[in-house]
Amino acid sequence: MPVALIAGATGLVGKHIAELLASQPGWRCIGLGRSRPQGPAAMHLDEFVAADLADAGCTRQLGGRLSEATHVFYLSRMLGSGYHIPIDENIAMLGRLLDALEQADKLEHVQIMHGMKWYGSHLGAFPTPARESDKPSDSPSFYQGQRQLLTERRQGRKWTFSTLRPHCVSGVATGSPSNLMLGLGVYGALMREIGQPLRYPGSARAFEARLTYTDAGLLARAMYWIATTPEAADQDFNVANGDEFSWNELWPALADYFGVAAGPPGIADFVPYMHELEPAWRRLCQRHGLQDRDYASLVDWSFVRNSLALEWDQVMSTDKLARFGFPDQVSSPAMVLRILDEYRGLGLIPPKS
Image (cartoon, rainbow, N blue to C red; front, side, top):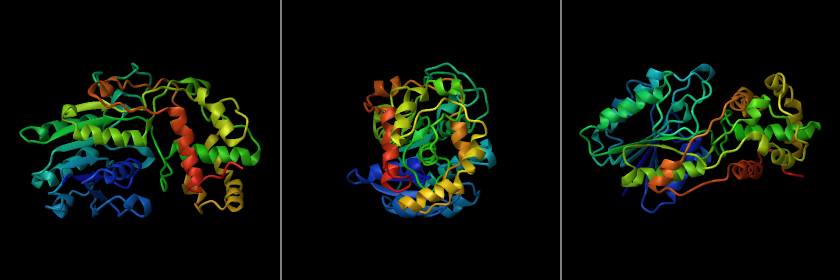
């Protein structure tokens, strides 16, 4: 029986890969994380192991509890304040898990999740479409260190590895304020409530930049396919929907979804402006019986602003993944509207009427 170990099982991607594996005959899923998941996130796990990989002593705590693992999906990441991602600590976390897996003599594959920042997408314009053969960014990153560590640990062992590079992973997630899709849903609903047009909260250049996004369901399918396909072993893969778009192309449909006019890009002081709309959000929640969520922790408006602020193209090629045999694609504009529909169905944003 294949046994999946999902490190970081409570996050958006962890939830999707656990759900997919639960639908595959014969798979058993073990979640690994700092705190036990609640609600839907726990539904598809057969077992949960509580451990903090940031703790240098966690390897001893884990002992042989992971010895049955055949496939590892590593999704853990340490975040510092202000979304600073410490390099050494994140490399060390992966190393501790690999130490704990030394006794896993059934291990077949270890997969780690990176992203388009491998190419320096967060720093400024870079060659697009980015390809796996491109030189990584010169900017220090834990990506390169983790990949080097994985390559070194792979030597002399029977298991294989893979690294995946999605971008702007999008799906339904609750309890996570760093969530662009929920942010767009709350923003659109508020603009309708106060009778204002939907304006893009970034510059005209950011509004027109070409983008590739990654649907969380497609990413989970790619994760499973790569981890179980021998030809994909020891490879790096960009994973994205397979199309590209700009927000200025999608914005009229998004405004129509909320029943408001599409306004021009550019909002001064977007973050304080959204904080001031808390009373309007309370009115919406009361009128429509929305889930009782604290507005201050519902959406991180700085995250939304920063996600929509980059003024250069962020496009990656998925030719390699298709060439190896993975066929799936997703329409990014359709994905955005589908996710908003799901949030409506969950009662997190108001219904259409």
